Length: 434
Image (cartoon, rainbow, N blue to C red; front, side, top):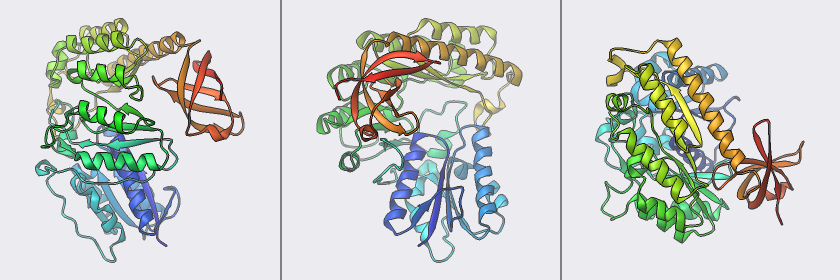
């Protein structure tokens, strides 16, 4: 039995794809082992969204070669798509196969081939169909990711993803429903609907489906399953989405809406396709429709040309809006993107200070949201049990991580939890009427 180790960096789409690798390799009779151990084959699903992600990808490749110099390496993902020459230099004459993002359905063949597997790195920009990558289980996870879309047409000036993932491509409706049914059969109680730009779902198909009709169908056909949307653009938060969130009890009141900057001049330089007012309206409308909704957003701090005024505009906007948490990243130059060669690059120490201020604000916003829900009862998907403390931890419908006492058998179930208190900024609650 061949031993195969899989390492994954980056986004939820990569995590879904790696789960598919694991499912297909297990069905083929392989034993999937921890990446830190010795394996016959290493599959590394890389990321290139930041310079650090590229560095981590190289580190994983070197670690696999050191652990077993004779092992076969299968390198895929966004770093593999953009830096194949660098990978070949690192691996030298080792047994390595680079699998582009458009051919991830061939990872199984590349891993199990008797001889060297020659797979030319194709131009991802010409791909017009999404790879079909069925998944059976997400090992160690109570929630599963369901990838319905890949690629992006936005070409934000800082982002390498359209060059590594190609154009927006959607999974056909029957395949989406089949994958959801598999997860239902496997006992999952919550699915996170994910993609690179999920709001564009269906626009490349002839099925007359949109992200809104798809979500409504999933909620209707799988009534005991909870559905959560991974991310959606400010321009795609509309009445259809909010009405669905209000009307479908199994569509979770949780939105992640990327902002990137709270300054209109910087948004234009980023080639984001909305002004600040559009983001603010999306947040306020969501909060008005569902006062308990969790709203997260992404911030890219220190973009070229961002002066103190632009930074303060971002801070003030977020302080004034009912957002719940922030994912803050410093701008990272990505070769091949327009922003990499822009003038007025922000010094590293200034970026670091702005990131700190934004993360501090995000921490306070999150705690404010938690405090507002103390004394309320939420529906929590229990995800894991700690033998030492006797506690379980899980996420409420509006994405509050709650710890509570209970038996281990509750893991994987949705239970009513009254949030009682915060201890060192962590919410704790009590199980209600098991």
